[in-house]
Image (cartoon, rainbow, N blue to C red; front, side, top):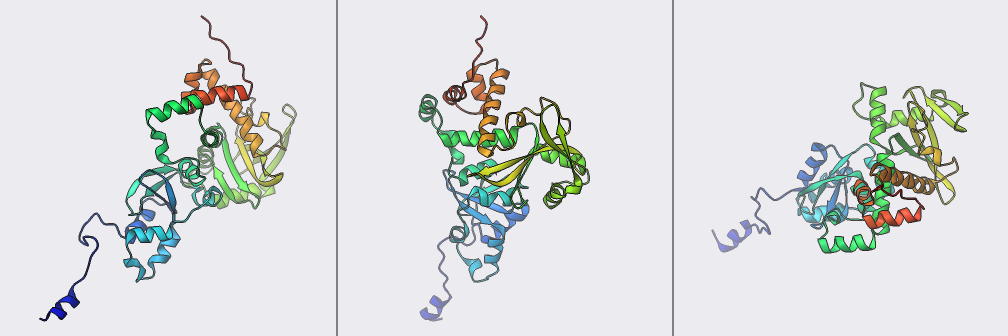
Length: 324
């Protein structure tokens, strides 16, 4: 065999083609199906969100055989897109946890919806929670940045209010629901394992399924959904004086305690007012439960002592002095 013939049979590899560690685009497709997720966050070594891989984009790209042999990092880099929280909401509304990967298709851990939203809006990276002592000391002294407080607000208000919450946009399409709503839904429909979003949207918008009541005690209007067997209040979500959606706040048994959050907002309040007033309410509850111990309240809320003190001052909250 001549040198020319030998050279024609030689294949050049940049990586060891027999290494089991090397991921292929097909491996990414498997992640979508194994974990039953519609998207995969792509992150750097430091936990910074680089982009989002959508299931349909990956499958469409792989349908071209010529492209399926491309390097994994080039494949991921090409398809990973920057997305805002508004764009992500409808994709993960029924997903509690996501799998994050790096540019080489290696799994880097699990992300909650909150992790994803905050990273997408540029508020923090996943690894920022593990800062060095020096940086933490500085943070305690100066207080947390505004973006970290926004993270706390979203988490505390939307996930920790002890009521079932469901939000839709101006077109009646789902943008959010919390764990309490999932529990309520499964109690109403025991045969269901997941929330049927299309069904919920239908029964909430069907006037024949929703009776209207007026509370003489609280001077407020309530609705009763026959399918879900639950009372609820409907609060408009506003942006720049325009109604962009509605937040449904459910409760099976209407009591004064259950109405703590809606009792401090009016029907004309937008989402900013709702968040602000709910934040104050949550802060007061944490202080009360901790015996007005600011350090303990900060731990309960997962924010710094400096930030708790700053918001106590902002909301003009009176701290009861400990006896002795």
